[in-house]
Length: 214
Image (tube, rainbow, N blue to C red):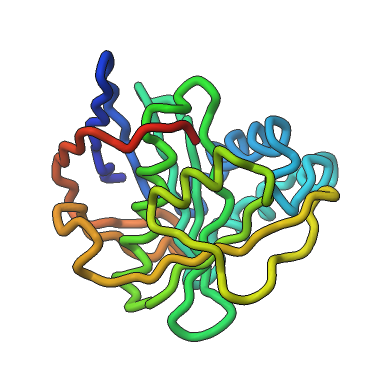
């Protein structure tokens, strides 16, 4: 399956991240990332690790998760090793897309991978002609809130979300305008098929990324 390649440059290092859309045929890679994410940061997700273990850990369930109609699921890889994930979902009303399931491996945090994943979903949402990108994040998750703020998110005007793992949540939104999305980013498509088929990738050089870590 084609991949989108991004070169992330920092002051003293350079890494090349491959970003690709995940279809139901990628369920094993997605499963590995998701279980790592739930074990690493249980406070960040509404789902619990035990929800996806035992009887909940079935191939057909993982395939169904990657086949949600109208969704976009993205995997980031470094040297062919999956290191990050994110999803976009249809929102609660027309013109709204939700961002969720964002996680980046500790091994590559602070390298701009989180920014790249957020921007990928934002670009996909613009292609769907969405006007708002919505997300929910733990209010005290300072690194995540900083990541979203530097990518254009602000606190939503309506009330915060429910508590997750006993922690209060805040809702954040980003207004989407085609002019704000980098035109050099290759087109993305929905991933509800067995294997997604994005447009032919082009090499994109982005430097530098904003400071901070995911």
